[in-house]
Length: 244
Image (cartoon, rainbow, N blue to C red; front, side, top):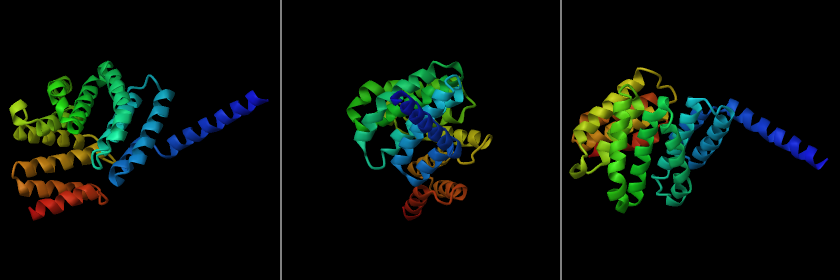
């Protein structure tokens, strides 16, 4: 009887999880997590992406989606400098991305994502720059060369060029070209409810600001807000750009 109760309970839990996955797809949940800047929603995104991946272990899209969910969670910790949460997930994220890199169809995106995660590690611990800086830059370059039509590959290459010190290969002009390329590639496919597209617009606007191109920065932030009226992060960046 006890085994029967346990089996029934597991079946109910599995059914509820499957229903939640169907009623609130992972991509939509990640979008809401990004727009609302809610770390709890990011954690839920990782949970649901994990369930989806386990249901479809040979699906490369499910594999990549799980890697993106992990990355989104780590990125979300930066706004509040929640290093404890970052440290809780970073090892599992890197392990997941290394698996994605092993798949030929997602190797470029996996390298780009890992490059960005190493960048986040350096942001939290600058002393790791000597160890991780070169690895991050190499991964970003390899991603772009492996998949020159991937918006993610160009996004992460642009991020690397934007945040790497010029003495170590950073280049604001090159970052802008890469981020512009990423935006164009995103827009050639689908940008509906795509948080990475919105975040890349925000990054491009900040790159323009850093380069002293105020008008372009303002236009880019306005474009992001036009794409998502609830994009409060872009609104704050726009206000700063206008008042600078």
